[in-house]
Image 1 (cartoon, one colour):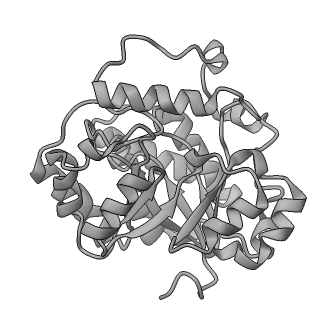
Image 2 (spheres, helix red, strand yellow; image 1 turned 30 degrees about the vertical axis):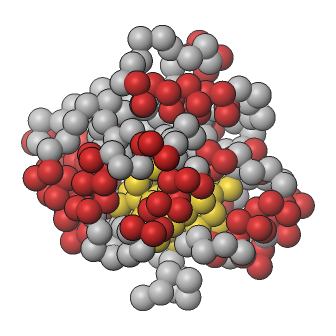
Image 3 (cartoon, one colour; image 1 turned 180 degrees about the vertical axis):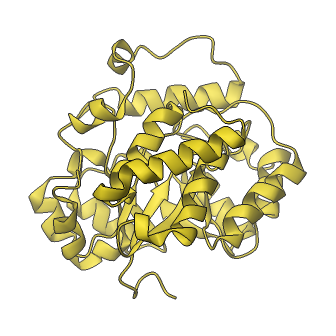
Length: 302
């Protein structure tokens, strides 16, 4: 079914690789036990990157994934009907990086018409569109587009979705202006970063450099580091869209919502999944099922 014409609410989940088992358990239970989840809720995509991909942006993810594991992970999600969405938003990518063997291998393995790419840098986007036209392209929040006019310009381009900057989550002027395009807007509902952070773009560039140089020895001096990240802290942010108001967004046509999680503790991610996806009266039951299933898989939440 065309996601632009159905009435489902789509949730875009983080860490398709690092949270592979958690995401798999959640998606599987949405099919096995739909009575535990809110009506018309579905997983729209799982986003992130395989470790070590230099095109990756937002949060540096170091390491390496062999081809057979790539194939297994992508197939698992796709067999559930869930696209894998690559965060290829490294803002420091230049033409010399386009022929990277590992990143091109990732695209080749996932090139089956089911998957998506988040983009930021025009030089990489142009290369990907020319060489991998079977992917759907999404304009990333890492662009930090803050004006209605600029957002509308993005929406005029060939993007499946445009991810809204989290500082605009409750800007009524922006939300009203974008209502005609609401079905193509993705909203990050639980960002833990401080509102109107003046260093966010600088932080993205720092993470981009770490990804390119495979070096994480120097932490970015971020004020968020003074407080351990938690879902309860995310709830205190002014841009947080809670269950008490999310229906008002859905009624206006906004139905693509993104959850944070890359580089964050699994406990925080699970808290957000239970909060948003489970029926309130079923939250404890769903958490118990997820925790017990992960334990059987030897996956520790904390």
